[in-house]
Image (cartoon, rainbow, N blue to C red; front, side):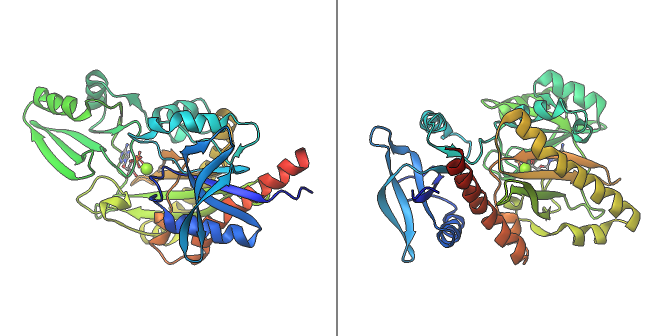
Length: 363
Ligand SMILES: Nc1ncnc2c1ncn2[C@@H]1O[C@H](COP(=O)(O)OP(=O)(O)O)[C@@H](O)[C@H]1O
Ligand SMILES: [Mg+2]
């Protein structure tokens, strides 16, 4: 056994001592402490590669304290891909290529990359909605084929920029959320006017187009199932929890940032589906979430936690909507399931501990 102190660095986009998810990182720190692991938060931009040190933030005596620390053995990547990601990317890549540092996992790229990867799996592609890169031409094709379509940014989050377009008799109805996540609704008399709007709306970002799936309860509430799967202390994938997110009726997305609520998946199924349907849906969701993580890993490389967005349409058909490699924990805060919440925070630390033991054994 090595006597080296066990260190876990949470890599975040810190702006000095200012960073998000402080409550989550505090929990990780406290859990780590019980397992003999020192946890700190740091920005990849604050690494001194020559000295192999970094300015980090340590949670101690009820406060985050600034320290100069040695580079950690294990890195938990919580750098979210967004407009400022490119300012961090070179530093992140340098850390990823460092032979003495192990990343718990390497984040997935955009929705299109993930879609193309899963499309190659004959077992998994049955759950994917048809998807194309958005252009005015593909939008027209989809509108000819489906009653309603959705466009969404290739690298969006929280339902931002997700828009539904419907061709109704003599007009086009467009509704969704803009890039600031504010809901809007518009009507266009002609296809040209609609296209002009969509062209402006999507300018500067890459979008995808899909059929609009009826992922709503009979009273019109949009919902989806968020499944959190994580690796445990033995390095094996395990389902941490399944929660249903319910959006507001006026919304087309079920993201909680749009002001929705959440409940356990089983409770929801009981409310909305017959016993027979419940069995079928449950079995299908379980098959999907069991096969997906190892498949993505085999194609993409190491991962250790995934937030899987699953849709269930009116007929009970199951759809894979999105795979997040940096899943948020919000959904489990919305209902009082302390076990799930607790486990969601425990698993990454247990898995980091597993990796440290593996490394020591391997050297
Ligand atoms: N093809 C679709 N049909 C109906 N609703 C959709 C479709 N795609 C996404 N949504 C809704 O929009 C939400 C956000 O989409 P998602 O692909 O998960 O992007 P993100 O969460 O990154 O913004 C989903 O949770 C779902 O409620
Ligand atoms: Mg999503």
